[in-house]
Each structure stands twice: as structure tokens, then as C-alpha cells.
Image: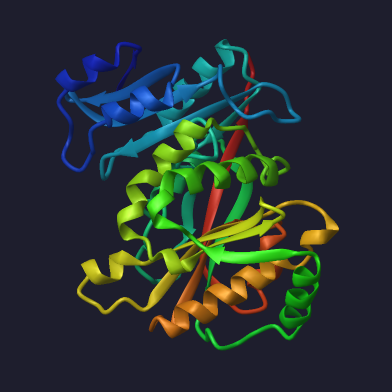
Length: 330
């Protein structure tokens, strides 16, 4: 196997690809600003690839972090040599920890599916083949963080503490409304501002600009039911939000839509907003049930996040994911 480093991403278009290996997305390569791209060749064709980041990566207590993302492998190929070369490149750039797969930061695609649960992928889920973790483990990576998605299958179930929380929130002048689809990008701008604040303590957090945030959510607009996106306000300021979307993949598979995906919940820190996340989740379940949905997926939660405390009251684990890391030696 030959490993080549590519910094002129336009050169990738001329490299033949083995069956089953998707080509790199030139739009992503431009927008995500990787520092380099590695391609594994066998028999003159690409059998695997990844991008590397070391200049714009999340902070970590261990020291400078290098990210390995845009990872893809053709069926049957062994990409341990590619990942070992990636580690060497990152170490040479000054990183002390390689993390992957992660497309530069956690606002983009990251993690591998490590427990499928037997159900097909849901809308907006980063789906990866079952054999991909073996490439990372074989190259000396170990789990750095674990995540899961859960599913609530009884949308009528309500935590009895939610009603009390609702009374307290109203007493604190917090009012909840649904998304105004006519002002979609303006609404996203307000959601972005709270996301930057609300997620600042999340693992591997990095800030993201408003334009990149809006660009990520712009393609989702046509799939939204505005009645399933909630914005909580206090005195004209945003206090929290819940972003949910129907699982359109069910329709594409020929089934009647029955699942709503609770993608993101964020609440402004402080006692005044205590219980708001649980209240928004309960309201989403109730609205979804009225609209004919029978299930809600609480998507892609870090196993130690506060959102897990809300989700476990209603749901069971549907899927598990893992982010891997390896310490580097220059």
C-alpha cells in the first residue's frame, strides 16, 4: 500500500477509486479547511482516505490536538497504515493527541457507530459501517468518549415534575413559541448565539461562526415541521430551544413516518431556566403525538451530558457511538 499526501485538493479528482469508496466532497474540503489530505493507494486506485487538522482544533488538557476526519475505506481494505501515517503527520505538526474520526471539530461529523441496535439509520445520523472501528483499534487508538441515541416509544408518558417546572418557568416570565419559518435564518442566528454559550462547556468544544452554523442548518429547512421546533424567550432574549425534525428516512424506505428526531436541546445557564430542557422535551413529545408520531429519538448525546438525565426518564438506548484517540510521539 502506498500513502500519498495531498495539499492541492483539486488533484484528488484525477485519482481512480476502488469500488465502494466514495470520492471526497470538494465542497466539504473547501468549507472544512483541512490542513492536509491522505490517500491510500493499492493497485493504482484509492482504497481509503482521510483529512488532517492541526491548526484549528478543539482544546484538550493533554495538549495540542490533531484531528483525523473525512475518513472512508473501501470494503476489504486495511487502513491501519493510513492511520499510522496520519499520526506521524500530526505529531510532526506538533500535536500530542490524535482524535478521530472527527471532521475538524464536533460541529461537523464525528464518531463511529459501535452498537447499531439492529435499527436502520435515522435522519441526520452519522452512519458508519460496523467494520470501521477495527481500523482505529488496530492502529493503536482507544476510546476517548462515548455517546448514544435513545428512543422514547410512549409519547404520552410525562415526568410529573414537568408541570411544576412549567409553573416555575412562567413565574420567571419565560414563554415558549414555535419556529417562525418565514424568518428561518434570523431564527437560526438567535439559536446560534445561545448554542455558542450553552455548549461552551461541552467536551471538545470550539466556537463556530454564525454563517457556518446557518449553512449547516439551511438544507434541513425543507424537511422541518415548524411546530416541532421550540424557542423559549424571556424579556425578548432567547432562553432555550429544542430543534426537532421528522425522520424523513422512514418515508424514503416506504414506511409511514412515525418518528421525530430531537436533534438539539440548549438552555441558558441559571436558576431562572431550571427545568426548561425537560419542559421543552415533554412539549415536543406532546406536539409530536398530536401530529401522529409515535416515537421520538433523542439523538447523539455524550454519555455524561445533562441531557441524558432528561432522556432516560422516557427512553431506552437505541444506538452507541465512540470517538477514538491515540497519544503521539514526535
